[in-house]
Structure formats: C-alpha cells, structure tokens
Length: 186
Image (cartoon, rainbow, N blue to C red; front, side, top):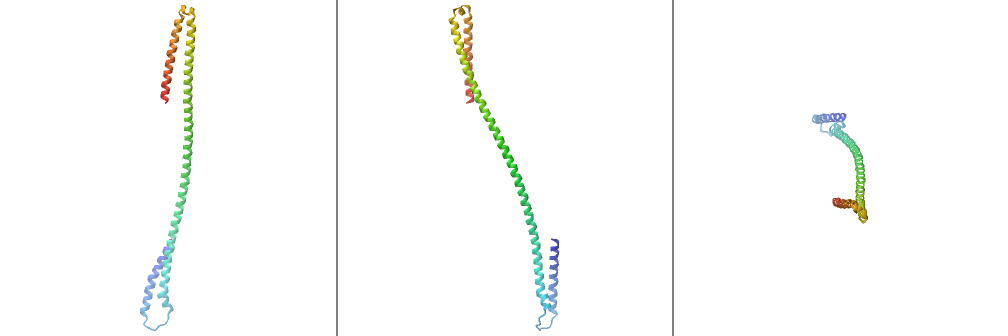
C-alpha cells in the first residue's frame, strides 16, 4: 500500500516537471516550418497522457487495495457473526430442552398431586362408610342388648345406651367434617 502511494507521488512530480519542459521548448522554437519532431510530440502530448494514465492507474490500484481490504474485513465479520449465531442457536436449543424437561416434571408432579387428591377423597368416602357401618352395628348391638332383660336389670344397658349415643355424635361430627372438606375442594 505504501509502495503504491510512493509510485503515485513520483508520477505526480513527473507531471509537474513534464509540463514546464514542454512549454519551454515551444517558446524556444522560432522556426515556423512544420517539421514533425517526435521528441516534441512525445514530450508535449504523449508524456502528459502517459503520466496521467499512470497516475490514474496508481489511484485505481490503491482504491482497489482499500476495497479488497474492506471486503476481507467484511468477510471476517460475517464469519464472526455466523459463529455467534451458531453459538446462540446451541444455547437456545439447550434452554428449550431445559424448559421442556421442567414442563414434563411439573406435569408429572401435577398428575401425582391429582392422583393423591383422588386417593384422599376415596379414603374419606371409605372412612365415612365405615363410620356408618359402625353406627349401624352399634345400633344393632343396642337393640339386641335392650331385649336382653338381664342386661337391663344389671345396669349395663344404660352404659350401652350411652355408648350408642356417643357413636351417633361421632358419626354426625364425621359427616360434618367431610362436608366441610368437600366444600373446600370445590
């Protein structure tokens, strides 16, 4: 690049020297005869044109060198951007996979929670049914006991009747709690 600039400067200097030399030769000629002088034609016409062409060529070459450097810089930048895009795509793919894994885990936990809630409801219904069966059995035992005259005479019937009443109270409390729980679930 520096060499091209040096050549350009030399050509410009030659242009400045070629113009005065040609001008001084035309002033010194007093002969009006028209004789073709190649030296004069070369210095006056061809040399300035050649120097101009060389100067333009040097300018063109230096411009082309700058353009080539800019294009190579753009190519490097494009490659750098391409690498960054690939890295970003890899990171994005990893993030997507993590989100997918997290979503699958959350869905599995939600399904387990739903299953647990259903199991609790089933257990509550079974508990209520069991309490009802116990209540029925205690009533049946009470009926049998009251028919037995000996139990009534000995005072065990009162005690059995108190147990039946307590069983009914527990059954009522159980139904109330179950209704409250079902209300909370809805």
